[in-house]
Structure formats: structure tokens, C-alpha cells
Length: 193
Picture (cartoon, rainbow, N blue to C red):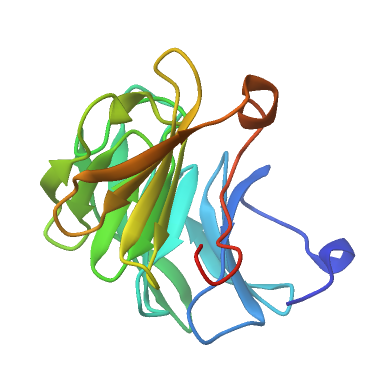
């Protein structure tokens, strides 16, 4: 990936989310307060399109999904990526809802940080995680274990492990508030996750 000092998010405003397309380590998509754009080795590829705040590539470098989590329109979008840049296919309102909700793609499903699971291509809801998953602030699908981890906050912080297919909760672990409050992402570590 290009050195961070050389990266300039020209045309997207402040970069709010970044995503690297599969198999293209020198390319990054940036979602900002103004638009989504793709950069190859730090050089912007084509025009910017549509404003979203959270982005995720599918299993292909030619499809990127976005969600506008800072406006009450709550628009989910599907976009194409090709040699000329990014183009908007369509938007769907209220498929995902909530401010500051994040999205994460894994093997044909989009998982949201508020517990909703959608099919990103058909733009339909598959279901949601049980209990108070709607209070979660971080989501992390783990393709190795077929689990999805949610950092939930009903009254205290809990890390929940859920089955990717059935959406049932497999277990949970209470976390100290001072640790969990500042958590913005989760990373798989070690053989057991």
C-alpha cells in the first residue's frame, strides 16, 4: 500500500473509511464526507461518486458497498469499480438504519454493527442477531471460524460470538468499560481467535 504521507483523498473531503479491494494491495477506496473515490498507488482513478461514510468491497474488486450513517436517509448503496473509477448502481433506503453504524462483508453477507445481516446484492434482510445486538458498536466476521463477533453495550460492554449461519449467540465475555469504550475494531489473534 502507498505510504500514508503520499495519500491524498482529493475529491472525497475528509476520508471517513478506507477499503482495499481483494487482490489489489496498491489500490484503496476512500469514502468521505463528499464522495467515494478509488486510488491506485495514491493517484485518483476517475471521478468520485455518491456520498457514503462506510464502505466494504465484496469478494470482487469490481463491487463496493456503502452506507450513509450520518444522515437520517440511511441509504445503502451498491457501486461498480472499473478502470474508469466508481459508478453508482442504486441506493436502498432503510435496509440498514442507525447513525454511526458500520458494515463488514464476509462471503456473500453484509454484517452491520447494529446486528442486522443483509444480502448485499439482492438488498434484502436475512435476519439479525439475538438479544440486544442492536446496541453493538463493532462487528467483525471471522471467516476462519464462521463466527461473527459483536461488541455490545446494553448496560455494560460484552463481546458476543455468534454463529454466521444461524445467527445464534454461542457465548459472550464481559469487558471492562475503560477498555471497550474506545474500541473501534476487532482483530483475530492466535489459533483460537
